[in-house]
Image 1 (cartoon, rainbow, N blue to C red):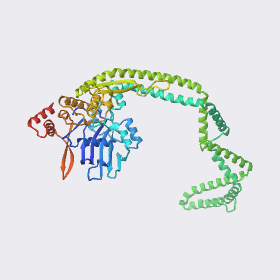
Image 2 (image 1 turned 180 degrees about the horizontal axis):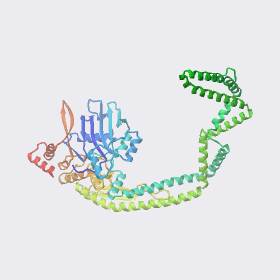
Image 3 (image 1 turned 135 degrees about the vertical axis):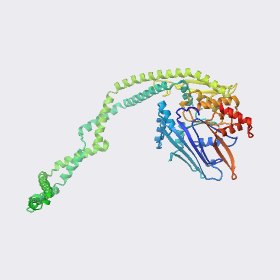
Image 4 (image 1 turned 45 degrees about the vertical axis):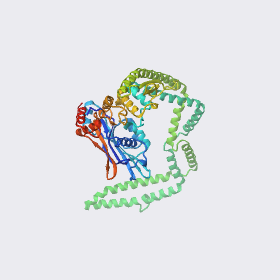
Amino acid sequence: MAELYNLSSVLQLLNISNIALIESLRVEFEEGLNLLTGETGSGKSIIVDALGVLIGGRFSNELLKSGTDRGFIEGMFEVTRSPELNSVLSSAGIDEDGEEIDTAEKDHKAATGRRTPKVELIIRREVSLAGRNKIFINNQLATQSLLRDLRPFLVDIHGQGDQQTLFNPDTHRELLDAFAGNDAQRVLVSEAHQQWTTLKRELDALNRDEAEKFQLVDTLKFQINELELAQLSVGEDERLEDERRRLANVEKLTTLSQASYSRIYEDDDAALARLRQALTEITELAEYEPGFRDYLEGLESARAVLEDLSFSLRDFSDKLEFSPARLAEIEDRLAELSRLKRKYGGTIASALEHLARSQDRLQQIEHSDEHATQLSSRLKATRDLYLERAGKLHTDRVRAAKKFEKAVLQGIAEVAMENARFEVQVGPAAELSNDRIGRDTGTDEIAFFFSANVGEELKPLARVASGGEASRLMLVLKTVANASEFPRTIVFDEIDTGIGGRVSEAVGVKLKKLSQTNQVLCVTHQPQIARFADSHLVVQKEVVKGHTEVMVERLDREGRVEEIARMLTGSEITNSARKHAKEMLKS
């Protein structure tokens, strides 16, 4: 197997049950180039279609195998963590715990200094005869929209009309920038755009404030004055409530405190007098029985507590005095506090926070002219910086576009599209102004134009490329560009349509190159492509107990010789075909 780079997404396992002709099928895939071969109609495309359904395609009970009422498709992916992936999983509440699992991979990381923490995603889609469709990701219920969000991190399928990325202008920009090596400049442009956006938002908010300035200033001044005059303090309402309760119950409190004082201290048989007597007796008793000495300290403490309590009761009773004026004053203050709390957040603390915010806000508005001038100056400087960086990125893109066109044209000529033309157009994305500076990817709109045949004018790629042509074109684009910028599992289905011989050899070489940076799954009928496989899977259709079933077998070297010989000659395999197959595998 060729040396692999740090793959970001690997499909490890695909389970299919009761779907189309498949009763039960388990297919394990490896890193590198996985090729599926077999007779026409053997079921290869069913496997690719099932993978498409797994990552968000339409799934209905029409896909169920005849005679069954329930089916499922399940896939296990090992994906490198990234901030973008973590964000998608976290927002959906999906468990994203993963492990770094492979020893060889760890050794590779140690040698290269790379760290690639992995997350394992198990996606399962179920459908029943009743039409109920369920999606699970790591055993948690999920939605189809989440599958669509995850799809760019997992699988890119090309063939039979499924070209979800090739026709997207964003992909065109990413491919050209990857070819040009514009990563560093893209970061600088994005940073300048973010700075400009932040300052623009702040200035817009300040201008809105300016329009409402006079009304807002009056309101803020009134509220600040009201709260400052109130002289609020945290806990004041609770203290006043306690005092009001005492004033409203002076008579009851006087009776209780005086009665308790008498029972503890003043009466002839007061508790304190009895305790002192008991303490004297226990002290004398302890002289004869040492065990009672342990109680003397406790009794002395109790005496001190009762004595202190009695004096507190006496002082409390002496100070109690009913004051209608003070009670009315407290009632008025509590009413005022209640009004302010209702108006400013429900508590005294929130009212004080509102006062602090209002004071800051008023200060900002009173100095808004000066602040607006500073912001405008900074905004212009940031805009100039953005346009300078975006201009350099534009220049780099225009310079790289011609080289990219030349490399792509050479590549598509090698895969049986000698008459095709390809062009990269780099134009302005939008009209620039002081209030509008473009996107965080720059000021360019990048589009690929294509013509497959002589005499046809160049048109946007989505309008002219057929399934097989689009598959081969994407293969060329991704091998010409830096394919490691798109590290996911790439599936090609119709890539060998209408080609053979030398062209198939060229396609195989490009697939092999792409598999160094991406896991590749490819359905092919060409032995010249099949010989490049890192993992060769043969798909067969057999009749078992009156039912047609699809089976997949991983081939060893002997099996690969037989399969490639069959692809060379047909159903009757000759010794010369086997010899040719062995020679192909050796080379």
